[in-house]
Image (tube, rainbow, N blue to C red; front, side):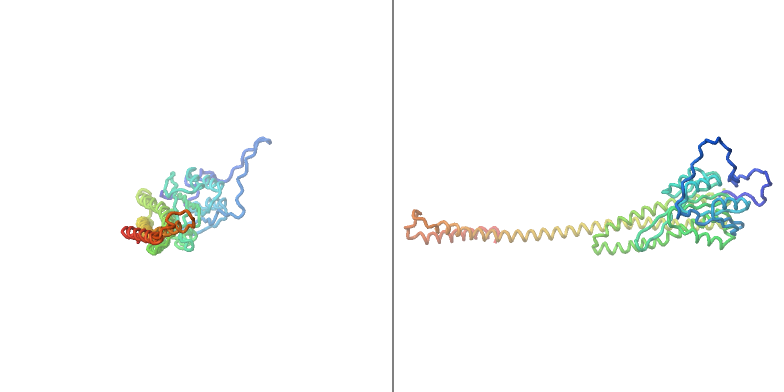
Length: 389
């Protein structure tokens, strides 16, 4: 961050506005146009229940000296405090609100566009003496057993810090209260507030890490228990870990980039120690997340192997059942064939026709009985040799 200029002595009347006070000053009266000139359209109305400004304050020497409720009041109060600092907290602000901030603090249009659209990757960019930071905060939802991600945009200048939240995390009110309880640290300027926010975001990763670790332990139990729904849970948690990696990995490089500029921007030694501690925590978190992804990949492989083994066992059982069924069918078919032969002979010779041959032969009946017996024995021997019986 750039060194804060000395603003203890207010500028004399009529003097030009100093470079660190970028606002256009009191609104000028627009020149009168012709009566029939088209008037500019008013900005889009804000939803009635929406309040963008969550908290706004002006600090001097680390202590709150004003608590304006609107952006216009904040600008006015900051103008009245030449050596003050404004900390503005917004939640899903409207486009006109962001444009008013851009006009007051000379914010770059690309950064304003990112803050409006959201869905940005974590990054750190400098626009002159303004630092633009994008963070991905996370929180673990116990009921749903899932990770909720939100986006936080931060504008840091010589005498202001603006936060734009898109989501429920992190709780910046607690960060502000903690800093207000330590005016010596807050008096170091917007850089101190930035590092406190970074610390809050990184500390918010710890419950997520613990929640994910618990989920992985439960998944391991479900895998070896044969729960059929575990594959879907592994897939969903793997996707969340991809998002978690996208939130933590860039943050490691961002913090090291800030630390590399300590000497150039004359960062206070206390803030240097503070940022190094935050960098250590985020590095540890990033390593844990990488380990989670690797563990989930291995669990998915083990689950696939177990499912394959279970399917093979089921197929083997089906094959054995089919083989036993075939053996039974063979036995039934064999006995049916054996019984069919004498039935065929008997039905033929049981026809009461006068012109049938051998009706007058005395040995016809014994011959028919003998023929049926020979056919049955022959079929039995054949089927027995083929292991059908």
